[in-house]
Length: 416
Image (cartoon, rainbow, N blue to C red):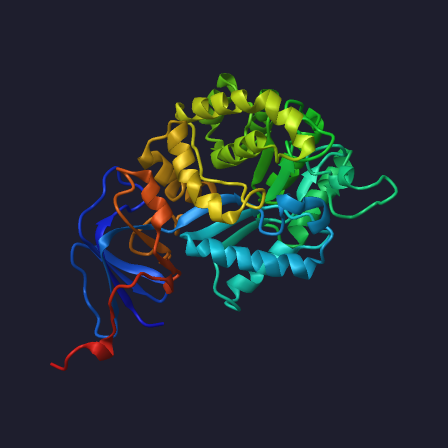
């Protein structure tokens, strides 16, 4: 792989509170070799002029669903595993173009493991796409958020959900996820808005069931992400060792304090709420979601502001798949609208998300890190909307997207 030299007009390195000025970044063999005001310029390096842009670590979305389509979930869930994987690849590549170089996929509704296969193909270099970290399925109680049987007639017993109703069944499903290649365990301990027959305000696991899931995952070295809603469900997830609370729709101050004290990450998916509000007002929200979201939407917004005002570790996640991936980049703006500073929002999508994923080689621009790098016109610390204007994307040293700027290659340089 040829070396690249990026010349940025400003730099957000993922951790600093202010932008650095003009910065050069030397990339070789998929990694960042050197960062500084001026770095060595190997003779074989392509020079990429980003002097009119802010350079940043590649964005990390810690909550997506590449193989689920909420706009037609009941029918789309019945598609073949291959069809879901191929559609997921297309979405992953689209999302990479917006600057998302790492994704955590939190569950497919499929009897097989399409996201594991997709991750493995990307890791093997069979195609270019974002880095993928996966929880293959959503482990759920019957009548919980992961139980999709309510979409179909009772006579059909379709194997699309990962359901368990005893401690032994829960342990078996966790072990199955581990055996077939999941990186994370995903569960739901409260109902959801788009699922049928459950309520986000009600927990759906008993304590012994939640304990069984988390302790089995811990035994196997797997972190746990919990779709949760009710404040009591948030507290249950924290008590039993969840690494991240997904959505935390109805979280209260006590639960936020618990999460802060135990460094449990909160992934509040704030743009999803804006999407749902828009659909509620337009009259296009699915019928099973209307009564629940109509009841809870004000409290959800209040809970998001509570999280934003706290010292909790807030990580960037969107729930794309439940709404179009093309809107995922708006999460940065939704986070700022809820009360996070632009700096904290940017860190949520870079270094804090990397810390959630226990990866010190992404989410930062430093020597030795993966060369996952994006650039955008403007200053995102002054106007977070700049994040929606990304026009340069590098993933592991490979340029995926670049603006109409001169890329000076070694052969273009005059001799001598």
